[in-house]
Amino acid sequence: MNTSVYSSDQSNGASSRRPYPARLVKRMVKILILSGFVSVVVVLLCNWWVVTSTRSQIYFNIHQLPSNDVALVLGTSKFVRSGKENLFFRYRMEATARLWKEGKIKYIILSGNNDSEYYNEPMDMQKALLKLGVPEDVMTLDYAGFRTFDSVVRCKEVFNQDKITIVSQNFHNARALYIGNHEGIEAIAFAAQDVPDGYSLRTLIREYMARPYAMLDVYLIRPKPERGNWPKTR
Image 1 (tube, one colour):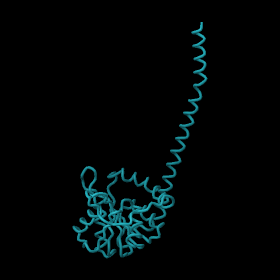
Image 2 (image 1 turned 90 degrees about the vertical axis):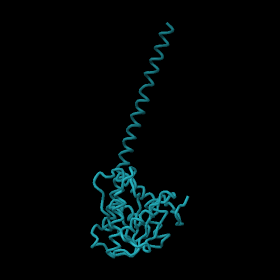
Image 3 (image 1 turned 135 degrees about the vertical axis):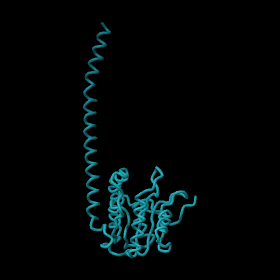
Image 4 (image 1 turned 120 degrees about the horizontal axis):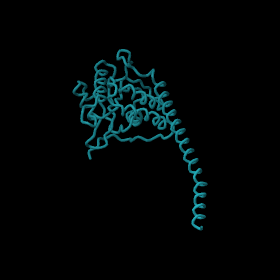
């Protein structure tokens, strides 16, 4: 008899406790869904604003591009992870060489990541441009362009340039221009040839996330890029 009473009490207690966790889980799921929806909307709105507000500053036709003394070329790796040639890199170098040969730019700042002696984007860009016929004395290497924000801000604060032509792919140019517009830089951009559809879906997804982050950098975080400029040798 005692056993049956115990079982009954245990059963009643379990049934009375069961609805509370269920309601809690349901509420948490709703919050997560709502948070996810809001996050997606915010990301899309940030992307829309960055692209829309800079669209008039990006040129695709070299003959319509105004001339500037200085170009800021944004770095990327020479090779992809598989070891194959990175088309983003190749097309940026070809666009830069063409701009210089057409007289649209006179001097070039090559800004990229050089976080070790084994990885040097500015040097790789310089070597590629030398092969394309651009003389070494018109190129300046920025070894601390670890991020697009760093490259743009250092162009003004370290290299004293506030009127520039940015060279990268179209999707990347929008973010760089947005940063430049809020850092007091008078900038336009030339869109290097884009890569084939599906070539690097990961890069495009990363860019979608990078644009909201760029707005945080501009308005809230305000990171401080390095002030020096020397290659990493160890």
